[in-house]
Length: 163
Image (cartoon, rainbow, N blue to C red):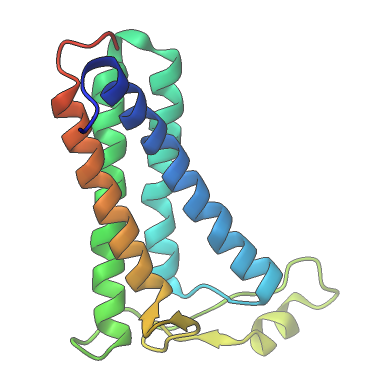
């Protein structure tokens, strides 16, 4: 039986913090540990997760506004999932993207212009990594959308619980 009341509330608040934090940790491990440079649309997916994690952290501190903060965190996670769907569609050729390719410059080099010119171009329409035919953007869509919907369901089940 799904949790209700205080248990549902605690789980919603915890998911709103842990899932975006875990996804951000995973993409930074991929970026700095395995050389998966993010494209412009990859960055777009990260921004809502930063917002969601910050909102969820505030929900642990500001008790009077906690329910609203968790709902906003869920909305931010859902936005990242929507961007993930848009990006996955561009990667799979379902539709055309409307971004330009981006390049990451190497910080701290002796010649910044040379670093910028020699930086690899990361295209938004090319899959850098996939598992079972699903790209990172596709996984972000699945995980973020599922998590956001679960948070909203838990918030509904926790009505009347202490926030």
